[in-house]
Amino acid sequence: MEQQLSQKEKMFLEELKSQEDICIQKYNNYASQTTCPQLKQIFQNHAQTEQHHFDSLTQILSGQVPNIQQSSGNKSNFQQPDQWEMKKSASDNQQPADKKKNEYLCHDALSVEKYVSGTYDTAIFEFRDPNIRQVLNHIQSEEQQHGEELFNYMHSNGMYPVQ
Image 1 (cartoon, rainbow, N blue to C red):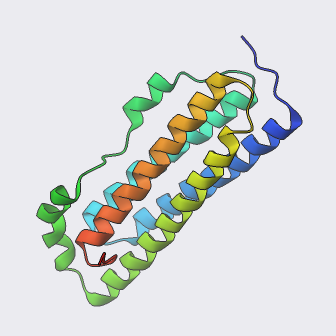
Image 2: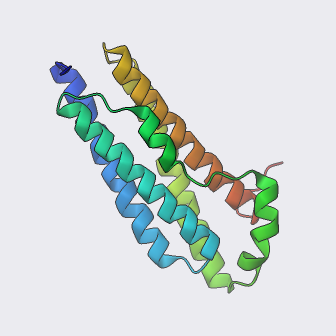
């Protein structure tokens, strides 16, 4: 069944697509810049998930509601903090300049995830169709997982101390 979107809903979807495109570009760029294998994998996984989000938004704009069950196969490799502790030794072997660069990349990526998650939060309330709201909520949840995964990596590598 094809969805009829209001002009406001279309505007939100175009804005979300723009943000997803930025995320895809950043994560691919950051994956090529980092020297840490774990961080490279995080960035690559997030880029793939962001591409799926972009495709889902494009599908909604074309009048179709994506099946969110399909996107569950594209989950990031979300890991709890204790799992990072075992992998931390690889980042400990990096040169100070590499660690500083990785810290910058992580902080920037986390800032983007915070912004994008908030944008989805607002957009969810602007859609009439509950199925579209459910898709947007699912995407927002994945954005929050990205942020948590970045936070856990940063915290376990001394980049985001918590008092």
